[in-house]
Image 1: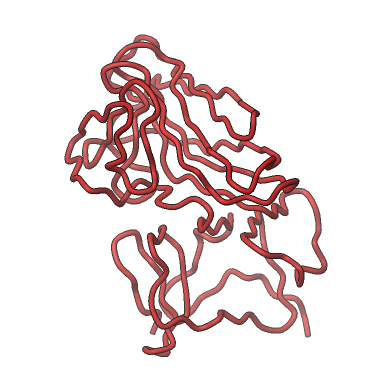
Image 2 (image 1 turned 90 degrees about the vertical axis):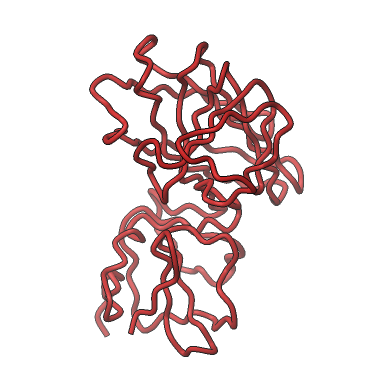
Amino acid sequence: MKNNYLFVFFGCFFLFSFLNIGVSQGIENGSFEFAQINPSTGVNLSSGNNSIDNWVVNSGTINYIGVYWEASDGERSVDLNGNNAGSISQTINTVVGKTYRIKSDLSGNPICTSPTVKTLSVSAAGISNTFTFDVTGNSTANMGWETESFEFTAISSVTTLTFSSLTSGLCGPVIDNIYFCDVCAFNNSYNDLSNIEGNLCVQGAIYVEDAIKLQPKSSPPSNPETGLMYFDSNLQKLRVFDGTQWQNCW
């Protein structure tokens, strides 16, 4: 049988968001959609605050944004500067010696144009990388989101992932749509995936010789991200999360 591209059409739409596949089960609430508060157009959260599900503010203040500007995924995002530079973190389960790739969408608060270049650091397991974003020409309706990657090798069974602003003032770097994978097939070929445990990220196409099976589940996955899919054993239907609710594919 010929190999076939997995640009899967299940009677409702192409799952184009899975062309760059990243199943965000390791990072919980990576798009900041779930919280104990409604951020509306934005609310400042101070150090120690854990109102955003699965996240805690480590230092300074952050601005939790709802409908004020265009999010990368869903409706909400985080400006790492509230009244001043802040940081936010989540502790995730990891396997010692495994290399993980964090992917995050990055933008910047376009309201304050000085500085125009917003800077943040991402750190985990003793490793830190710095990223910048230039807000020139952007607006609340067009945030110009870019995807960045960060890799670390786990040195413990739990790892704290931290996003920190390195920009002073009120308007800082903005983050959204964070996920990680523990097997990343970005520049390599993997012919045997039978021993993979965890998440698989693929940038490009997947070739399938026969069929794909989704293990049926009786209830939806918790804290779903846009594009996540599962087969519902009660409804006997494939379901996809559209960022707001689960949609049946037939």
